[in-house]
Image (cartoon, rainbow, N blue to C red):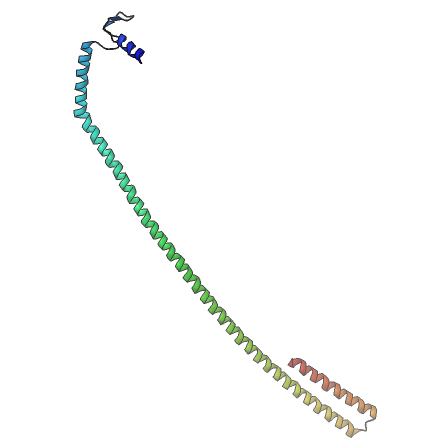
Length: 197
């Protein structure tokens, strides 16, 4: 540290210094005295002019920049509040949508259940009607076959009486007639029973 101070002191001595161009100065570190005076006066004048004219403009520019930044911050805050309000509205609407969805699903389930019950009732009514119609058809077919069977018995009886009256029957003919009659009656009864089932 002492060495540095000694070097500065030597440089600052008022011994004339000559450079390679022949310019003589009293110190290699400090300017001449008149340069210091004029330089100081020029600095004071320029600093005064800057303070009088440039400083207000700089202050005004800084205030405008501050106002612009503040306006941007206020606008961002307003946008944030608006976005939060919109977000709350969307959340509320979403809740309403979920409620409406649940209500619609419940209504659809109720309508489907009602349609299913109506379909079952209609199907049961149709089945009952078909059973009634089928029983009626079976009874009418049974009655018709019974009437046909009676007519056939009457015809066969009349034919048998005619045959007995017109001629004598031998045992073989009589046995054949009885077996034919039994076979026809059995076939008619089986057909009527098949139609009834």
